[in-house]
Length: 291
Ligand code: C2E
Ligand code: MG
Ligand code: MG
Ligand code: MG
Image 1 (cartoon, rainbow, N blue to C red):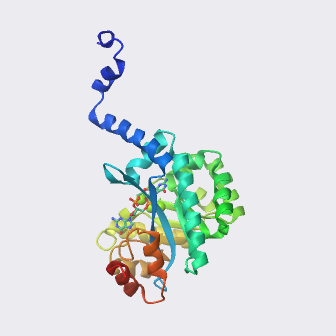
Image 2 (cartoon, protein in one colour):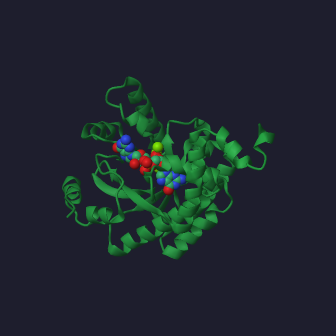
Image 3 (spheres, helix red, strand yellow):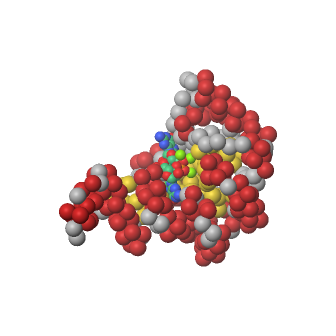
C-alpha cells in the first residue's frame, strides 16, 4: 500500500491515523500559533490558612482559550506542549506573567505572601530553569521569597541527585518549593527527609472522600503526621465543603485550597477578593455578585 500511495505519503499515513492522533496534530499546530500569539491567560486560586481563614497565597493556573474549541484544560495541552517542545516557551510565559502580577499586587498593597507556579517535568529537567526564574524575578522586581514552585512527587524522584542539586539552588535563592499532588506518586521517605522543601500538597483525590472513606482518612492523617515530623507545612487540595475544612484543621493541616474558598479566577477577581478585610465568605459573595 505504501508504494501505491506514491508521492501522496501524507494522505496515506493520515489515513492510517485514528482521529485522536489527527486531532492531537491539529492541536499541536494550534499551540505553536498560540505560543507566538500569547493566547494564554493565568487564573489564580486562593490558598487559605486554616487557623485564620485568610487567603495567604495563590496558585497560578494557566488557561488556553482556543479560538474555535474554547477553553482547553491544562491537563490536555500541557502534555501536548511537552511533546511538541513548546513547554519551555509556555512555562516561561507563565513564570513571567505570575511574577509581574504578584509584583503588581504587592504595589497595590494586596496582602499575599506568595504566588505558586506549576513546573512541568521537561521544564524542571531542562537546564535553563534557574536562569528563567532569575530573569522573571529581575524583570518584575518581585522578591524571590514571594515565588513558589509546585513540582510533582514523581518528578522529584526521577533523578534524585539532580533534584537535590536543583532544590539546594532554589533554597539558596530563597524560592519556595511545594510537592504537588502528594500521595499519588512513589516517594521514598528517606529521600523526602533530605529534600529541602517547604510544603506538601495533598492530592485532591484523597480529600474528595476524606469524610467517608476510612482509607482516605488514614492516608490523609499519615501524610499530615509525616509532614509535621519533617517540619513541612501541609496544604490540602480540592477542599469543597466546610466539613472537610474543619476535619482537616482538626488533623493539623495548615492550609487548604478548593472550590469552598474559590475556583481559579482572574487577577481582578483576586484583587477584589482581597481588597477589604471582611471575613472570607462575605468577600466571596462580593466577587460572585460582581461588585
Ligand atoms: P494542580 O497543580 O494539582 O492544580 C489543581 C487543579 O485542581 C486545578 O485544575 C484546579 O482548578 C483544580 N481544583 C482546585 N480546587 C478544586 C476543587 O475543590 N474541586 C475540584 N474538582 N477541582 C479543584 P486545572 O486548573 O485544570 O489544572 C490542572 C493541572 O494542570 C494542574 O494540577 C497542574 O498540574 C497543571 N497546570 C496548570 N497550570 C499549569 C502551568 O502553568 N504549568 C504547568 N506545567 N502545569 C500546569
Ligand atoms: Mg499545582
Ligand atoms: Mg495538585
Ligand atoms: Mg492535580
